Image (cartoon, rainbow, N blue to C red; front, side):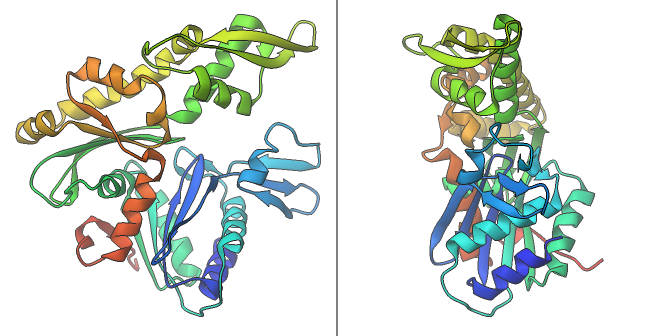
Length: 348
């Protein structure tokens, strides 16, 4: 499954690598070089030969536009690997983009995993990487990596709350003494927001739009809470009745309504995590507030809505999309200090 990929890594990589293998985006951090790759988790494959045509940004441009003999695939679903073979092809393509020189060292690797994944899913990632020849394999839970990336003191006895909204999962965790004290993980995040926009346009206007158009609408006029002036944008799709292309204008008010249900699932998950938090740590959160990370936290007005719903200070991280991989990189650079946050691979 991962054999070819790790063979490639050990061939021309430094010996320490951190990977944030996300549903929407994959980021790779190399010790001493920082973030070397940040591209969409998409692969374009020739159906007849099984050969990879493009990965990352190039492959994403093909989503929804491929002829019958080409498939553009997103191999990650809900934060975990849905298609091992395609994931391997994607990673091999990314590695070839960032290779520098050959250093024949078996790598030490840290991979981020959602805190809510099952033991079976964890073991599948670990075993695949071990069998493929990695020297050491560590897993780290995404909310912990995000907290480290933001610079929170995860090893202190005070509570730190992180809300990490990615493409496939939303992770809400209270962290203290290098561990997760209470958490709530839901498989509702950026992808579900895109789907909500897609469904709204289809039901309201009888117009079918593409996956990329839905994402563009969310980014341009999407919001969770009224902020500033309401906006409009022109969109194009296929009229389901007449069967011909159609142009229409859509407003931020409409998209806010379309996103309402998805956004409130995140709000409820956050409240649930707060309910499970021990009182002493809850007091810390009142003082320090909650940090939002992940691409989904960039939805306009989401921080304002969460502030209103929880009456707590909400802060969006400075560079939310890179927090997880930066945190994993920091852990990689100082493994001794962060030993307690790692889930080390075990030979069963």
